[in-house]
Length: 256
Image (cartoon, rainbow, N blue to C red; front, side, top):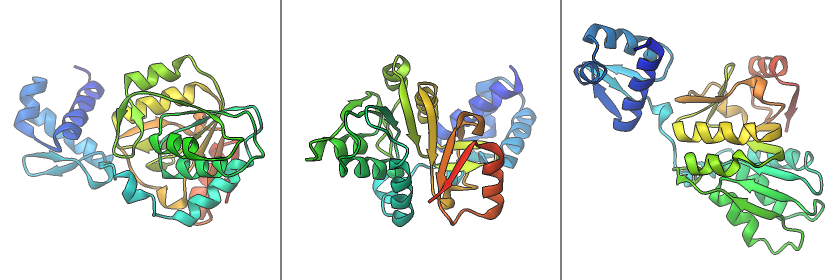
């Protein structure tokens, strides 16, 4: 078994069970305990697991908070991002909106204005769909909600969600993130990573939306490199070093 495949299987075991023992991994992978310990050391250095005596456990950054836990965090920054996002939308577009509280705030802005008529919104987010469904605005968009398995952040993910968007095309996609680093956008949820990739693949223009607090936060799976992103909307609390990294990697960076 190739080392990268073996380490991927180790990550899957850790995420599924929360913690695993070296002996269990060695037996499951049919390798020596020494090989497992070497793999664990490399994964620990990457911040993907925590090595503990006799095994490994999931690091705190890889746990996915509930939607309600995140909605009040940095609320003012999310509103600023949403206001900038609204300026990128044109009437008649098909707009993709992924899961997350920042994307929900964008949906709230869309629901409250009448400038953009004849919009179609494709989303895998239950809160986004609910916001747009409940609006009394006569210019409310048509909403297409994917199916799929529900995550703690109330996004629908997995094969059903991916198949729903595989044959769709959006002019614009707004996508949030659990964490952002120089390597790209990350999430603690493997299925969400796959669904996010499908949403990105179906979009003409990808807009990543996140406040400065997300920079440097790790996640189990990377679902986008900066080459996949056309525009970033972030906030002024992003460090100068991070801002420089983004402007070197992305065509357009908007600071809300």
